[in-house]
Amino acid sequence: MVKKILKWLGVLVVLVLVVGGSFVACQVMAYDKSVSKVYDIPPPKLERSTDPAVIARGKHLAESVAGCGIKDCHGGDLSAGRTIDVGPVATFAASNITPAGRVAQYSDGELARLILHGIKKDGHPVQFMPIQEFNWLPDDDVIAIISYVRSVPPVDKSTQDTHVKWFGKVLDRLDKFPLDVARRVDHEHRPTVPSPAPTAAYGSFVGRLCLGCHGEHLSGGPIPGAPPSIPIPKNITPHETGIKDYTFEDFNKLLETGIRKNGQKLDPFMPYEALAKMDETERRALWTYLRSVEPRPFGGR
Image (cartoon, rainbow, N blue to C red; front, top):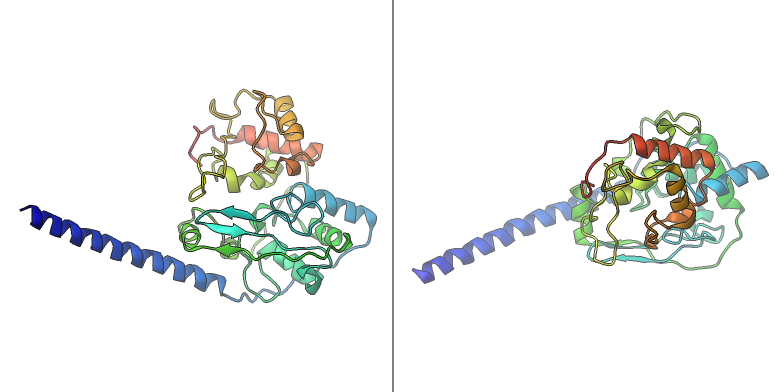
């Protein structure tokens, strides 16, 4: 009897492994096929400006709302920040986007297409670059970012490529960890964005910067597949497990200093250096938006 039970248990284990392996293989193949796609999207007819005011606007956006200049992205000098090892998911490495890097091979229109659609010069989709967080920016702001990127000093620095592992590919296909960005973009329609103002409507666009870590509902919880070295994002909804007891002054101090209301410092993984460079309108808009979302208990992502 015991031998018969062990035999059937063995069969069951084999069956689970076969089915599970087939599922993983299908998801990996689907991911590889998707990122091999060549998109037929023409570059927008946008060109850089040499106007100092436009370049200054681009610098502000790159260092704040777009998050390009943070240490975990392209870095303060845009020559590429630190490489991030996310365990079994992927190894992420941003490119050198100074005039000495790959960006020099792009036309202004191709660079605009990368920002708006997540499509590289060769038509293939970029991986991991979180364009969904800032591709809502209007044309004037896209031009400003391009103008700033073209204006920075060249830095001769070689960089690695992002490497997505099989587990990361599966998580992407299950919509748990978006890495294949272009297939999630509506390439036919761009959102109508209100003019910058301290409103929840404008803040909902600024707040896209938060979704990748805190989740679509902003209630935090473990990032699927992330190793223990990646901190667990907090709840930033107006729930008692979130920021219900925060005032704008508390929130503003958090953005300025990286210190919570209880005196604890934010984990360095949190890109508060970008948040600290938001202007008054962007901060007020983000605050108003976060106070307007549904209060959810911690962990609902």
